[in-house]
Image 1 (tube, rainbow over the protein chains, first blue to last red):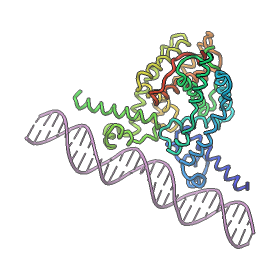
Image 2 (spheres, each protein chain N blue to C red):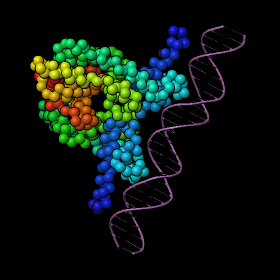
Image 3 (cartoon, rainbow over the protein chains, first blue to last red):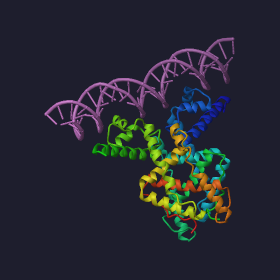
Image 4 (cartoon, each protein chain N blue to C red):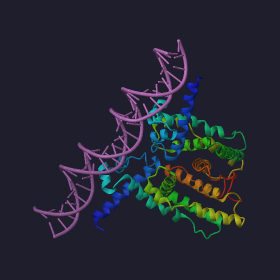
Length: 187
Length: 187
DNA sequence: TATACTATTGATTATAAATTCAATGAATAG
DNA sequence: CTATTCATTGAATTTATAATCAATAGTATA
């Protein structure tokens, strides 16, 4: 790769990083292409030299993000309860050490739930479902008695909501401390 | 109150309800005044007869919402652990039975975290802090040995994140089941 | 050095959404 | 029943932002 291409790639990444940070703080619609350009320190026009539209820029981030949550999960062959413990631990570890990963986590869940997301994004997210595999694992744990009874889907949601909420906190306020992962509030 | 005033009040509430639902689904910026009017079944112009601007409409909702979380919390004189159990139970109860309350919950946390919120809203939310009292309660519980050790602020965040995440699920998908509140995933 | 390609800017244009407004119809009071 | 006030509309206006573009400066390559 020539020096020029490398430079171009670097600039692209700067834009992606600035966009990611602003998108998770303000949301897609409230983030002005202008804010992003300013954050990077370039003119508004130049940004369109790197990304053909605001939507494409967002799309590029989503594509990057799609692999993140899966890659951070523990192998699902484990004992279910063990899986949940290890996954939570791993996620918090990444989130604590890699701000980019934390932000990606937030971006993905925001995109997943926001009904105002552009159609192209919704399409990308169609196959992005962490609830189904999680629900199955919970059922397995309930069958062998290691996980409490109750609607397994609801429990899956509770699990991911808690993780997602904490990821959001950490991504938005890196200074705020993150609790060690255990199964419970009780000592 | 005359029949006309009553009618006006009813219309105002319709707008508030439609706005609330759209704001929590799409976010403030992505919600078009047009969408709201359409949802209510009125012309765009008429909406401005009831609220002088999109921002004022949002503001009216925030003002309504400010008292909600506090009003749903258990008395803080209880044993800390008991407080957390009862509060979670009460919140889930309200959320399950009063969609409006669930939505308000979501609106408030979205507004609280969104950096793109209009300045007037940020001002309203300045004094809206559930973390400080929660952190103090956790410290009390840690002191008397009923709550696990660890950064109390982080634990407070974890508690509210989980609740907020579930509230969001329930508000956005009323059909999805809600788990019974206990302290733990473990059976 | 000359030529071609790329990065960059600031001004311009297009578009979408918020807000205003003049006109109309419906309800109410006198 | 008449005058007045309020609710309502749809079109006109303003404003904010996305996207384009022509012009300029910089960099690589022959």
